[in-house]
Length: 301
Image (cartoon, rainbow, N blue to C red; front, side):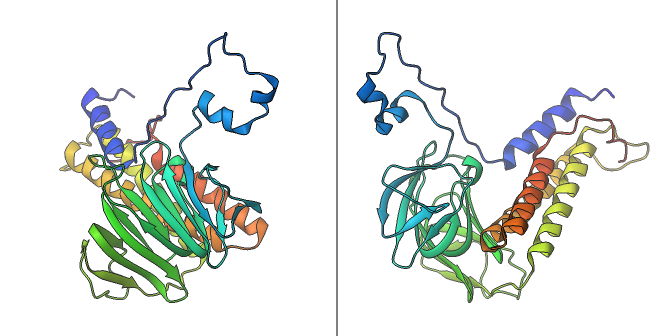
């Protein structure tokens, strides 16, 4: 099926406007004359100067006991955004995104996945965190913090967040943030939450299975609306290309939020087999809503 350049361009703009940007720096190659000595090659601190790792979070400060897969986090450690951080009571880890320079601190006790897949995204199964303002700010770029009960997103804000048995609490110290889903339980706040204000969402009893289903449904909707953007208008249709593109952007944003909430439940799932199944299912849904359709199935309009 031949698609118009305009439709392709609109879809590309829609995808770019919602997807978080993460620039990958090319690897820095050492010169042939700079062959490392035996002692230098044994020093782990020499590696970061030679090869730029994929985007993640670098540990700026570690207090108390915090670990990844049972291994203690040490100063300067790079967290890859694929493994959860477990923090004991009284512990904290200050982190900086290796590409954007965003900074935030995780506070225990907790189970948190920072810089998910290298993006400016933090999943909180339980625990606290604080963010810093005026760092890593770019036009259109937002940080997404997801919990099983809701999400918080901001472009530039200093805030304190806590999620646990009493629900989600967010206090904005500087800037503004959006707390969603706003409709649940008729919360007593309006978005955005401004500096000096506090907002709460009651704990949500939605099961991991229900969160996954919501993620998969939203991802499917986003994939189908992307196909509609590329599909030729059906005879007699009143839906313009611009309207279809706007709908796709809304569906894409909804899928991003729903799947981040489902992914945050992974950290609270203790059974290894169930945890692996849930993680794989969310990853599949993420790939679906982030994809650009290539087939000719977008004939329905």
